Length: 452
Image (cartoon, rainbow, N blue to C red; front, top):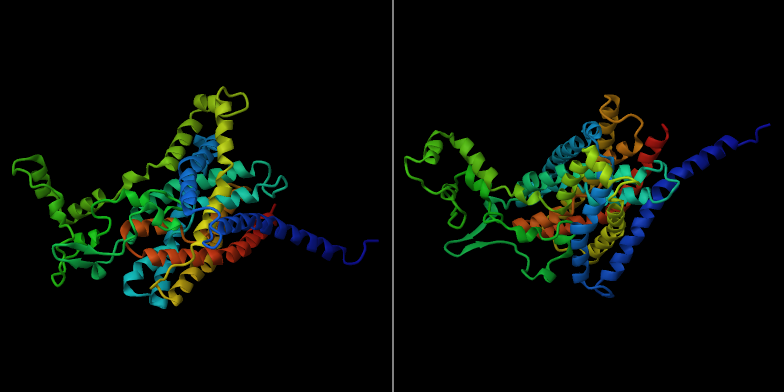
C-alpha cells in the first residue's frame, strides 16, 4: 500500500530541486560580489582601486575574448548561425519594449526635463554581456545542472552571439539618446561649454566608468559632449550656440566645379543632415577585443577545414585552445569581483529623484521580465525558437531580467551627461537585482524544467 502523503512529499522534493538549481548559483555569485566589495571598501582598502581597474582591463581585453572565442567558435556553424537568429532579434525586441516602458515611466514619474531621455534609455538597455555570462557560468558550474553536460558551452555561445547587436546599439541608439539636451547645454561665449566632467586623472574616475568597457571615455570625438543632433535638426534663435559646431562647418567649401559640390547641391537637406549625423556616429569604435573575438569565432567556426585544425581533441592547435580556455575560466570571478568593487564606491548624489529611480528599477527589474516571458512564450508557439532547447530559452529570458547595462555609466561619462545619475541608478538597480533575479530565475526554472 502506498504510504499517505507520498505524493505531496514527492512534490515538495520536486519543488525543492528548483530552489536548489536557481538559488545556489546566485549565492555563489553573491559571495564573489561580497568578496569584491570587502576588498575594495574604503574602510578596508585591502585592494586599491587601481587594481580593480587593471582587472577590468584584463577582463575586457583577455578573459572575455578568450571565453567568446573558445565557446562560440566551437559551436557556431552556418546552420546554427541561421537557427540562432532570434537571439539578436530578441535584443532588439527587449530594447524596443524597454523604450516604451521607459517612456511610460518618464510620463508617470516626471523626472527633471533634462533627464527625460535618460529615463527612457536606462529602462530600455539592459546588461546582455558580462552579467548573463556570469549567471550562465554559475548555473552550469555543477555537473548535475538541469541543462545537461553541454550547458556552459551552449549557454556562453548563445550569450556571446547577442553581444554584437548590443555593442552596435551602444554606439548608435544609446550614444545618441545620451546626448546632452540642447535646452540645458550651458554655453559661455568665446570660452566654450560648461558641462559635467569627471576628473581627467584615470585613478580618480569611478570604477563604474571602466567596469565593462575600459577606455571608452578616452575615445572622445570632437562633438561627443555637445548636443550635436539637436543642433543639426533644429534652429532655435533664442539660444546662443557659439561653442556648438555648425553642421555646415563640418564640410569644407569645395570649388563650385568639384564633384562634391555637385553632390551637395543635388542632395536633399534632410538626407544631408542624416549623413552628417551618421558620419559623426563613432561606429568605428565597436571593433574592440570582444568584437574581434566574435568575428574570429564566426570565421573559424563556420569554415570546417579551419575549425578542424583549431577545435577538437585531435586538432593540431588543441594546445592553443586549452591555453585560452584556462584564461577564460578567470572571467566569471573577475566580473563579479569588479561588480563588488563598483558597489563598494556607493551611490553618488543624483538629481533624478527617488520616484524616478524607483520607477526605472520597477519597470526594468519587475515589469519587463513579465513582458519578456510572454514574448519568449509567443515566439516558442510560433516556432521561432529551437525546439526543446531550454538553455536557448533561458538565455532569451535573461535578456529581459538583468538590470540596466553598466555601459550606461561609461557612455554617460563619454558624453558628459547624467554621470552621477547613471552611477546612482546603477548602484541601486544592482542591489535590487539580487532579489529580482533570484525570484525570476526560480520562476524560469519552474517554467522551463516542468516541460522536460
